[in-house]
Length: 173
Image (cartoon, rainbow, N blue to C red; front, side):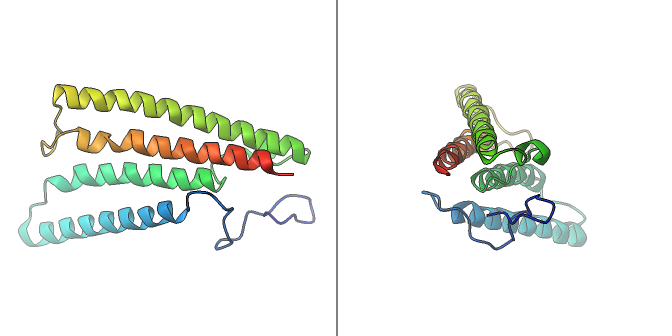
């Protein structure tokens, strides 16, 4: 819970403070973030070593690193939505009565849900097209759906986290 200051503004939650209880543990996003960051570091390090000793880089590292950065952004976005730490204009979101703040928080969560549900549908259509037309990735020629399958999956995860936040804010006194 945020701590109010002398001026009436709320301080952000202290890092390491316990998260709100959720049905699906937030540790999933936390561990996925750690794993993706570790993979990015290892791939980049291996590519630097290969370039240093052979003057050539691995062809697949740039394509795979871009994919991992997109996954990282989506996983971190899911954690941010679940923790209600997504970007907002605090002047509007944190001012007014508690009922107004709750209503704005619920409205924001509902809009995030709508956005990512729509993204899940549209990226699902892209995935279908990638599979149907046999698209391959431009860098290394693997099936493109290997990359695009994760966008609808992670969009559904973010939409689910937003829906959970919507209901949690509705239960607040």
